Image (tube, rainbow, N blue to C red):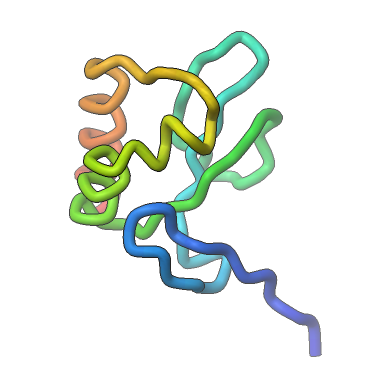
Length: 87
């Protein structure tokens, strides 16, 4: 039986299977986007597939700390829209 990798949600801080979480990526150019494939190049952070976890991550600035950069509000709104589409 193959072991399923575990990742921690940056919003609620719970460990889940990697395939249950959404990956947010920042690439070398500095663009931030949702990675549905889980294979995009760049630094990734994982979050549950709900708006509440994203809001917690925004409020506590966990996403900014993970990517070691400041994130503009328009990027946060894009992420909100993308997660809302997937629900």
